[in-house]
Length: 139
Image 1 (cartoon, rainbow, N blue to C red):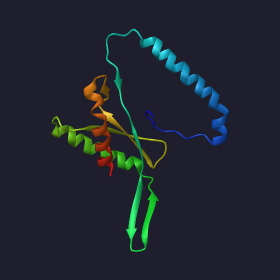
Image 2: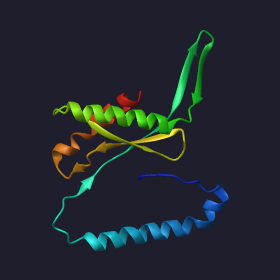
Image 3: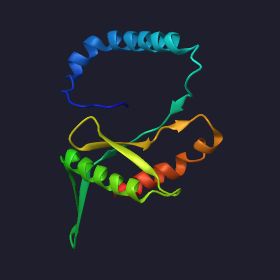
Image 4: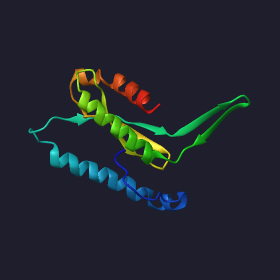
């Protein structure tokens, strides 16, 4: 969830030591942002959803199939971004745009709608198609 630029995950043992801190400060940040923005009238609420993909390669042989985890998410994201640029140039009402981001590790990709949805029924009805198209783009 969100944009992960770079970093190293904590070990399970170290993560357990800071778990309560992370929970508490996550709630405090949410309340702070809510209180800062609760009376705003100058913007509409934007929202979205995300799909997280694990990047694998399936090799089918006469003996069966082999599935390998691929650690090339950054290369894949570069290609997906180029494809999105081509779609933007084509334009048209039927084009479904996406944004691609690195996720937790080198073998994971996050896909989100572009642009985010507005708080309208028409946008709620776009979610299923948007998610389907992102799955098709990465396959």
